[in-house]
Image (cartoon, rainbow, N blue to C red):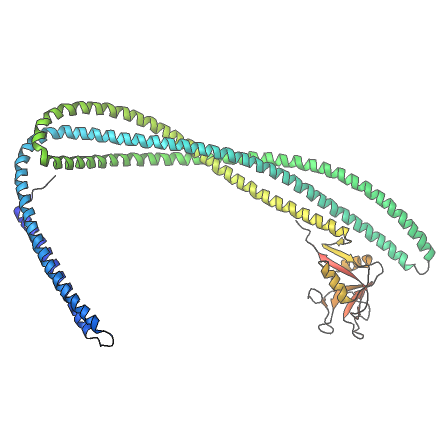
Length: 535
């Protein structure tokens, strides 16, 4: 509502505004004074820093500042006169407004009741319409979101099935490779055992070699026949191993399928319990949100009503200032129209209330359905990520087995022999120690390092009566024997009296035991390449 202003208040406003004008004038005067002081100060600068033309320009600026000062004073006087005229016009309009206000107040009393009722209904109608539109929009958005989640759920289900299939295939392939690897290891151990037995037999024959040469030849013939017979038995063993591997693979597949079904059953039970817990929590949260929504809606309606009333009152008073006389004649007609409009708005209010309740129900249902789909989407995403991780691990494991298997096959074809996580290569020719090591490095390995009695026994059977270089020397410090990897020799299998450092003997060979020899001597050599056999 507009408040009548008294004449003393108007006078105070005039004095306040005139004070502001004086302050503006004093500020302009101070600014010009400061500019003059700055100009005078600048005149004290030596001639070396300010030229004569510069001084003339400063004098011109001083004159322009004086002109600006006169303009500010004229503008202040003009604004003061304009303010007095505006104040006189406002007073005249205020007197006229008081005469019309008395007549308006009589009609305003009867019009206020109907107007307030109409405004309330109009506000309720507007609020319900907006709420209906919001619910309609929310309903549409939830339906679209539900469709998107449904599509994502379907895609994730398909992706999960594909990953599950790939996981099963990789698991089966890994098991087959693992089985093959285990079988090859067992076969290698058997061959190693046979090799050891044959080596022991050969050593016995070697002991009587000097006395029974003819008997050795006969035994060598028998050995050849036994080797052929062993190869036949080995072929039969291989066929039986392949048949056993096929049966083992079938057993593994059935076991994996049973475990998979058991895991799926457990996961579904856990997922059902999680969904039940989520449903309980969401129900409690929904009730809290419903209560908060009701309170906020009531508060919003009150604020909206107050805002609408204030806006209508402001607009009506603004219009009444120029149209109060015409409004007096139209108020009677407006009363009848407002009554009819009130009835129409009442009907619209009832219809919108019913429509709002229906939309609220649809909104609640769609929200619940969206939450369920969101939960399913989250679970499927987690399951997909787990399967993806398993798929990646199994792929890496399979590739590692393939690489190691290929390396073993390739090394075997190149003449390398496997023993206790290392590959060994025996040369056919003879070279010095340095040349032998250079050849080993070209093959991606180094000269032999012996760390145990078992390895020494294996080398004794591998070298076949050859004296071979090993990766041991004391060329850096006499008497300090080091392996080619830089480590000092701890375990040793020297001949009696060795090493004796007779002359320049800085490198080591082995026959049955070790001995030091000059590094430029010509012997066969054995290369060693360590490999990783664990998966």
